[in-house]
Image (cartoon, rainbow, N blue to C red; front, side):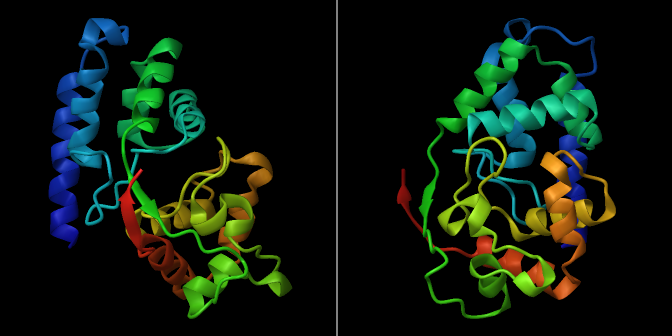
Length: 214
C-alpha cells in the first residue's frame, strides 16, 4: 500500500512540475480548463472521484465555494501542501472561479444520507451520527449535513471521500498543520479523538453506499 501511494505521489510530482515549472500564467494561456483538468486527474483520478489507495480526495461534485476557498488558502499559504500550493499559485481569481464551477458540475454518486435519527451501529457511525458530547465532540452530520453531504464553503462533503484522505486531514488538524477553518473548530474536535476513532469515522464516511449518479 505504501509503495503504491509513493508511486502515485511521484507521478503527481512529475506531472505537476512539468505543467507549472514556469512563471504563473493566466489559465487561458495554459490551455484553459482542459489543461488544469489534465493536471488534476493525475492525482485525483480520471473522473476526479479521488484515489483511495493514495488518499487523494474527490473533487467532482464538491461545492464550488468550498473548492475556491481551499485554492485561495493554498495560494495564501493558509493550508499546507507543496504541490497544491504550487498549482494554486498559477491561478488567477477568474481561473479559480472557472475551475471550481467546472468541478462542482461534474457528475458524482448520490450517497446515502443518514441523519441523527438513523441507527448508529459501530464506533464510526456513533461518532458521525451522535458525537460524544461528554467530550465536546459534536456529531459530524450536525455541521457537514445528513450523511456528510457537505454544507456551503465551510463544511465539505465527507461521504465517499477516501478513508485515508479523511484520516490524514484529521491528523493534520490534530497537529495544527491544517488550521484554515473558523475558530479552529476542527482542530479542537480532532485533538479530542484517538487513533481508533479517527480510523473508524473515516471508514464510516468512505463506506457510505452510493446510488446512481446525480
